[in-house]
Image (cartoon, rainbow, N blue to C red):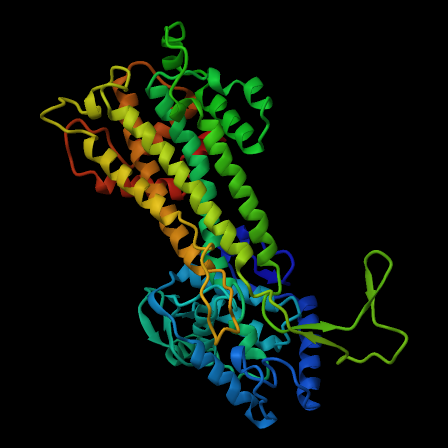
Length: 524
């Protein structure tokens, strides 16, 4: 792939995935390098003049009133990284850690963090050469950002701690850097706090979960349409006039998808004059429920796109400038401006509340997506509800149990989601001697969300397999061309079940199909 040039202003979730998953190379943009260098000059001048500034010439957190002598500044950097590398639990997955590295580098490249350009360059080189820090997933309260996860990243940068090789095997950081031909960094003033202070842990997991969730809602429209047709449902509820009367954008989109997916179905034509007036909510209200999930995703994306391109450490460096006109910025003319003019301001951009809220919101939305899917599965397998299909979609029901237990599995996952969807962001706990007395718990929200995404994908996989089985029973009647394409995709990894068999491998293969966006292809 063509290299991605980061500047702190225009990184997208898709570009994050390109780097995290597809290994797209990354470089610091030349214009951003100038901004980074100018901010660094301000930090160097402050240190040279022995001025007091938080985390540059003082300790951090509750120890911010402890003055650090100039000859102790390098030692402070190492101590901060080591002391904050206190994570526990399973490591983040390699794509999640790579996403976190990219997001941290992008934030530093805005030119408000006061680090040297070599810091950004080294993170980019680690990404480009496959040197991935070992980052335990637990230990962050989401303010002052994701301190422990980011400290483990910084630990690898200075040649300490551990990394993961290409097979996710833990190796020493010195060995990983040696293999990648990268020289460990010696951190200078402010660089440790700039590396460990921010929201990139929760954001990395959240961005990848967001992209996966967007695939899930597209797939759910396709799978829901398969189920509706298999249950001889009506497309009347998707009439455009209904949805224009309540024009939520997500609802309009899902209704449009369903109309397109069901158009030309022989199954639909076969029962057009039946006496049933309307379908159950899990079929009739697909646009309203799936659409609300879409609107939630859109809001979450908007918030995350702002955060991706934000400066989130503390303190922040602001080179001197004045506004002239609407857009231009020039140096002040009323005094002699130099490269070292500017302010270093302490604030709270590291606080993860904006991200914690949307991570929780997304978990709630996906729990609903899985919940309505499970209700459709129940209608497919329940002989009292499935419109004459075999009980539990079993050929020779009784001797064969068919999809009796997959519905139980789906119910289990849906109920687990309900527990996981309890918001983490409503909690807080005091840390750092009551200096950091209100925190976001955003990392907890992101880790819960990751599990909800996996559960929802598996529920949809079960529904997809059941819907395909149900459609097979309706032959020779055919569904629409679009849904035949989706059915064929399912059958490419999962044959018809003519008698009981072990199904967990089928579910896994269909889940992979969904993750790869193969089912939404039938829409285009």
